[in-house]
Length: 175
Image (cartoon, rainbow, N blue to C red; front, side):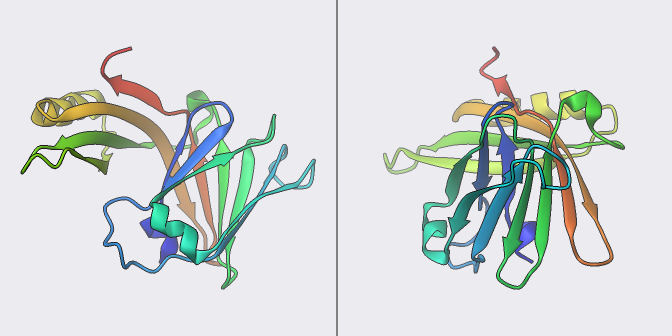
């Protein structure tokens, strides 16, 4: 279940952001071990990148620094379930990717000035760009910034996941 609760964004270079967005604060998230490598089998230059214990999830967002040239990661939970992440160019994504939109909005009630991060999935049936524009338009009065990212998630019988991520791009304000 933890895999459904996490959002991943890649900057296209050397940072992977993992977030627990749109979840209640008391949602249980696992202890994770993150290993990266420069090959898809995680054998070439395999590196322990991070160990995330349960207490670190209170930050809601974790930024992972990747070693140079490492575009393959494996996240393993204490129960042995995994997500393998492939960081690829958009043209290398298999199949029809889904679009994930991350928006930062300023909550303007009672002068709190709280910043809310909201992740949404947008169906990519040729209307992805217009749906992104519609989301930006609906939130424009409070929107600080927005990024989008294309991704493909494959789920296998042995309960492992393979997540393909293309670089995130800024969609608001326009570059």
